[in-house]
Amino acid sequence: MENERLKDKIALITGAARGIGFGIAEKYAEEGAKVIIADVLTEEGEAAKEKIGEKADFYQINLRSRESIFEMADVVHEKYGKIDILVNCAGVARPCPTLKLDEETLDEVIDINMKAPLFTCQAVGKYMRRDGGGAIVNISSGNTKMINVGRVPYGITKGAVNLLTQQLGAEWAMYNIKVNAIAPGWIRTEMVETPLKKGILNEKDIVSVSPIERFGKVEEVANLACFLASEESNYIVGQIIFADGGWSTGIMPNALNYIKENDTED
Ligand SMILES: NC(=O)c1ccc[n+]([C@@H]2O[C@H](COP(=O)([O-])OP(=O)(O)OC[C@H]3O[C@@H](n4cnc5c(N)ncnc54)[C@H](O)[C@@H]3O)[C@@H](O)[C@H]2O)c1
Image (cartoon, helix red, strand yellow):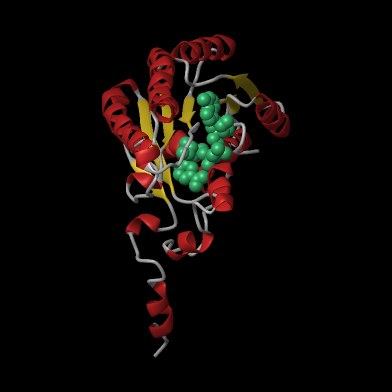
């Protein structure tokens, strides 16, 4: 393809065996990057690699281990000679009423959603600085502005991702390392389908607080992730961009009915 926006870039993407991470990997490969899918799920990771083809590689990792994260950065850098782009997409939600939350669950969510992105940034950032720069895209959540009850570990760790993004955006811009985050709204991946099936979430409720009146698409997040990884976004530093169909404007459920009924042409 001509005018590939990520031509010859090396992109390490965590949580890319499926869902949003996989969509980002597909998009980056389409735009000319070599993508390393880093995920704990071996079968899904291998399948994701097969689907993308020669532009993809799979690296099996449990991101709960700091040691494994630093080893991954070393192995990937050694193999490809550089890492231009890091996407921190792996995440878990683990919804649960707060009075029932146990420490084991809290630790798991903190390890995966908060500590792992910090460790990957350290492990990869070291090489990016040495090699002259790079782009980091953290996947945060609309839950950092809008509250979903029963998601304390998720909300607080994603809030930390936003602050990590601002901190590192400010700290590393002078190294030519651009750090930004995407806060997606509602995308129908495993993370959303499972609670929908269990009745923890409700499709109609979600649509009724989304001005766009639908769920988001993986491609819509992937397009933004591509922009933030490309040179087109070079003046954007330390920002959290909400891709959520307007959910974070905070409209009341069914508020649009009034407009629909009264916004008639004169
Ligand atoms: N789907 C949504 O509506 C939505 C909204 C806002 C934010 N997000 C965020 O987007 C990101 C991707 O989520 P998704 O919706 O694609 O869900 P998903 O569950 O399909 O994908 C999450 C991926 O992370 C991987 N992962 C989880 N724990 C891991 C670990 N310990 N080590 C390595 N990999 C691990 C999983 O194997 C999976 O491939 C997450 O950070 C999530 O919080 C999703």
